[in-house]
Amino acid sequence: MRKFGMGKEYIPLFIIFILVNTICLIYTTALVQKGFDPLVIQGANLILFVLALIGAFMHNRAVKSNNPHAFVRSIMSAMVLKLFVIGASVFIYLYLAGAQRNVKGIVIGMVLYILYSILEVKGAYSLNKEKNGN
Image (tube, rainbow, N blue to C red; front, side, top):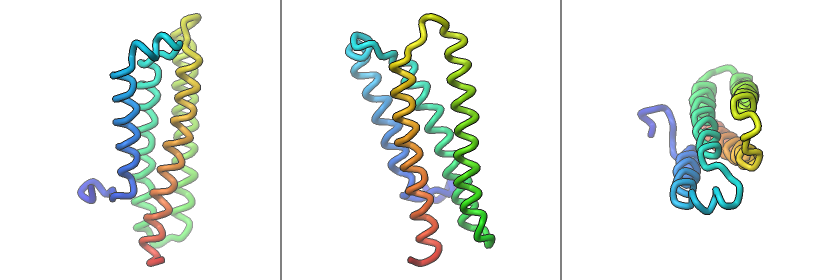
């Protein structure tokens, strides 16, 4: 993982991504019966995973910087990036889906957003702690 600039701190991101996709693939009929659209959940999962990876690369670059404010800027920049991309994605989905929108899938996406954000920031702080030798 160090080849890509990421360490073991971000392995939980990959685990969550694989776990959510596996659940959606295995339990597709059960999810549909309960009113969840697996494609909406998988789409949200993919968008959030890519955004978390982008944020992780930003955090890795900031930790290597000599500027002490770069780390805080990377955390805030990643959050703003997520806000705009996710907001635009939701609005585009709601516009295109029309009356067939799946609100339960969007709520699951919001829960995944919280989970990915927690794991990403936790990984970033452990990188910062590792750099500072604490």
